Image (cartoon, rainbow, N blue to C red):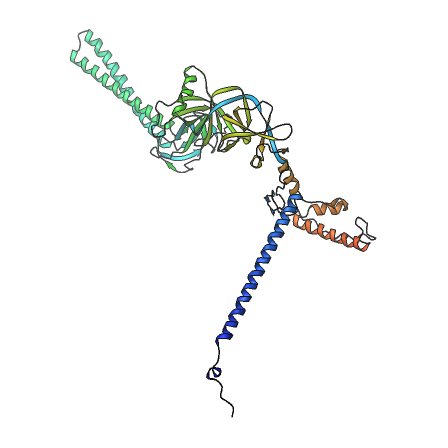
Length: 499
């Protein structure tokens, strides 16, 4: 009889299989980590080699010294240069010239005079004698109001005047007769005095009647609305057939006098002596009005008036300048940039404003010598006129200073001077549609291809190149060899009708 198994051998042992499963999962995770690390190391080494190759052969792959253009890093439009190579820059020339010292301010254009044309009598608007936007002179007829009621009123008071004038004349004749009888002692003195009083009473009545006639004539003349000042008309505020009244606030139209025209602007309190000094000496101060972007000069004028008080809130004082505005480029309530000339610096050094660099050590420029190396020159800035800045420092007339590309430069860097518009010219050439192979097409086909939209033209030319490439391969594949049988050009679609 076989001996029984030991008690412990009859029990299952689940712990060891569990440990084996956990050990297998750990080895799998370790393998994954090793694989990722190896792939990362390979990728890093590959990128390092690619960057090194890009430094040796610019334009191949992204590397040191390569910027990102519109097509991505190393794509079209990116600037590529190898470390230590000459950097392309644009330069300007240091000159000597007169520089005007200008005070800059923001001004508001105001009309010389503004008049709201209102009717002085009530009535129906029968005629409008102007067009919106016209320039009129003072006294020009603008509108007419129905005059019939005012004509009737004039006739009424004129009749009363004629009646009272007749009574006055009769009383004067009686007074003259009574005075003759009094001289003959044939009439009482009291009767003569009474007649004299009647004559004076009728004289007053005639005067009242005459005033009423004058008032009626004046009201009748108000039915013809005329321009009170010369200027430019705005939008009409009343239409034909409307009943207009003297109490209306909007009136019929507004006239603004814009020739000449004023500009009100403020200057700092500290700059006041620079303006009042020349004015007290009898000199005229020139002032210019520029558009919002300070690119176009709108008008030139002169300072006309300085306010008599300083604004304590802002520490500024208002100045009024007058402009002839013959070309009507200034409009009331327009915002303009003002430039007030207070002095002129004679024969001073100026550099292009784009050449001025600012850093922690102050302001400086990069000067380029004959060997193409740059040197940092510290300068002190002065007044600015247009796109040139006056400077003082270690600069000489005729030297060249960097105006574009200074962000990549250091002291002693080697540069290559290029035209200031080279990048723009290259972009313009790149933007032109590619017309390679068009000269090989018949004239009628070429004209129809040029009339195609850009996308359709590119598709047609690509198809043409593919057919020619197939013909070259059939001829033996020799580069530049003509095919045995030239492929037929794909028939272009008919030219689109002009839009």
